[in-house]
Amino acid sequence: MIATFTARFTKINRGYMGELVEWPEVITEGSDLEDCRTMLEDALHEMVLAYHETGKEIPVTRVLTEAMAVEV
Image (cartoon, rainbow, N blue to C red; front, side):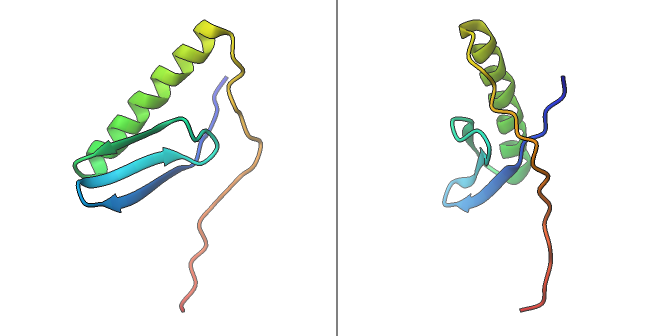
């Protein structure tokens, strides 16, 4: 099964923090945005493996989110 998660990236002093909106336990940091994306993908894969090994249910959402731009 393929699941989709929403990644949120926040600029911090050391680079970027990345987290998954639907799965708050998946969080990491990277020196730049690309590094943070890579680290977040790795953290997600590791968390999926850990949940499978322990028999926990993976938090899958059926909600579609998308960005909307507006001039302010």
